[in-house]
Every structure is written in C-alpha cells, then in structure tokens.
Length: 428
Image 1: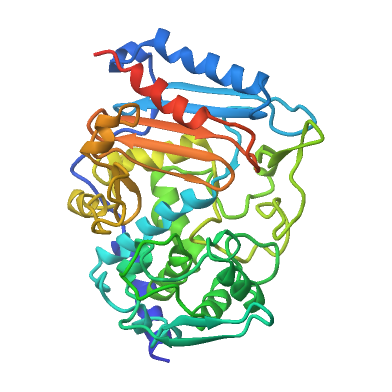
Image 2 (image 1 turned 90 degrees about the vertical axis):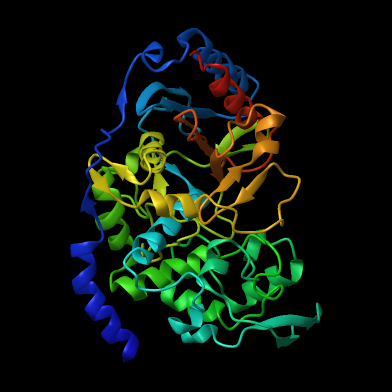
C-alpha cells in the first residue's frame, strides 16, 4: 500500500516538474554542408566506398549511416536492402536498437533522480522489496539445475544496477552456463518477447534468483537496466513506455522511437537477417520472435533492450547529451548531471581497455584516445545485439551512428572502419 500511495503522489507531481524550459537553446538536428561545420565532403565519401564494399562482400545486407557535427547532419545515407526480398533500405528505416535502450533507461532514472526522489546508493529493495537480502550462487548441479546459495555481503543499489556491478546475470547471453540454465528454468525474459507478460512480473521473478558475486565487487553485463525500467514505473506511477514518451521522446522530437511500433510505422522496420545456405534470410524464431516490435501482446517494456529507433532519432538523443542535457530549449538533464553520468563509476574494472563505464555509456580515456581511431577523451559509445553502433565525441561535437540488422558473425568490420572514417573527415 505504501508503494501504491507513493506512486499515486508522484504521478501527480512528475508531469509538472520533469522537463523545464532552458535559458540555453540548441536547435534540433538539421542537415548542412560538411564544410560549414569543419568536415570534408570528399573524406566523408569514403564511407560510401566502405559500405558498398561490405555489401558486395556479403558481410552485411545493408546499413544506414549518419554523421553529425555541431548539431548539423553532414552525412545521412542508406545502402543495400532492408529485407531478403530486396526492398531498398531507406534513411528513415527503423531498427531494433537492443542494448542502445540502456542509455535511454539510465537517462529516465537520472531524470527522476534530479527530482530528489531517491539516492543512487539507495538499496533497490527500498523500492522493490523482493530484492531484499540477496543471495550468491554457491553450488550448482548440472544434472537437475538445483543449487545452493550464500548471503551476499551487501544490498544491490541503484548505482550497481546502472553500472552492471549488481551481480545479476543475463540469461541467454550470460557467460556462465549455470546462469543461462537458472534463468531459463525460472522463465526469465532476458530482453524481448511477444508473450503477454509485464516487466513487473519478470523483475519480481528475477529478484528471487542468485547473483554471480557480491554487489559492487566486479563488472558483469547484466539485466540491471531491466530492473530499472520497472523502478521507473514505481517511482513515476506511469507505465515505462508512457514515461519515456512523455518525458524524453516527445520533448526531443524522437517520434520514431518505440517499444512497439504503431501500425503506420511498422512497414519501416528492417528485417533481422542472417546468412543461410549462402544467402541472406530472415532470422527465424528461436528463444524470441525477432518481429516482437510489431507482433504479440506488446506488453513488455524491456529497459535493457526493447526499443526500436532510427538513426536520426538516436542522433537526436546523443545531441541532447552533447549539449549538456538540453535540446530545442528543453532541459532534460542538468549539465552537472551529465558530468556525473560520464564519470568513472566502476573503479579499475576496465583497466587497460582505454575506456571506463559511467552511469549510461562506455567513455573513452586518454589511453583510448591515444590508440587512435576511437575519438577524443570523453567520447561515449555503445551498441546493440542486432549489430547497431554509435559514438559521440564532446570535444569535437561529433556523432556517428551505424545501423544494421543482422545476427551471426559474417566478418562484418564496418563498426571500426566507420569510426575511423568519421574521425578522419574532420577538416578544421
């Protein structure tokens, strides 16, 4: 009852306070000639050759690439096909962005944090009691998937969930076979589903399962952002999809970003493809139906992997961050909050990688910059399960988005090539 009353009160408050007009005004992304923002059109054309070569070599069936600098789109092109039938890929095609959803969910958490509604180091059990007294996996029997546990030495906090240091697992992509089996047996939805289930039901089941390790002890990619999607529902009193639309997507003009696509946008969804008998084919139904954005119950809002979007929409989201939390005169986050989001939140867990992890992104450090081809210090990035990638460089005001939609390894090297080609096109 306490949580219900809190949610009802917050439901009244948040729509009034969440976004405010800003004294800063950064216009929405618009197209401009590369030279107007210090980019070389001739050098950007090298992306064309890279994309065409990758398609001709059957590494990918198609891609959409976008480059923006200083709030201006200087390159936005589509190459190849959207599906096995050969439909031409369009610039406004919609892609399943999978783990690129995580930064969006983290942003929603920080929007609410700025309201003073919780502290990042609060235990999540304060809001989702099922997480009280977490247990760590101790012994496991492969024969029947039974196991024993031992108490964790601390509670899972909101910060742990944001930074993949909670100890939670990640089901079918978990590196530990035991957790794959435990999650499957418990019926945990790892990312996508067409079934009639809610994130509340899923997260309450997840809360009963053992952890990999004591919270805060290590970094391990996990379902923490799925937990936080449900947390946003509890704190805001709104369904997660409605919260994102009202407090993030509509203010930013991200009209093509959805968990489940409206009927008038469904035909723009790109097929997930894989190589089968030497040809590109639609990826079949396996542990999930790849057509979840347009089929099924449409009731599960995965904070870790559920959104679909366009290159321009996601570039808009990143531009808000490059602007210090503002776009189109709307303040989504304070510049001081963005600064904290980009800080090193995981100690030395990624030491030697050239990056650290913040509250929403991987962030390049001096070593990463000096390795070359990755951007300046502070460049933030991530990608998605269906082969999408992005980066944004605050020092250069530079955004790169690469959207593809494939499963299975096929020698695709467009990710690192694209990043080099975007950076080498800086001409000022």
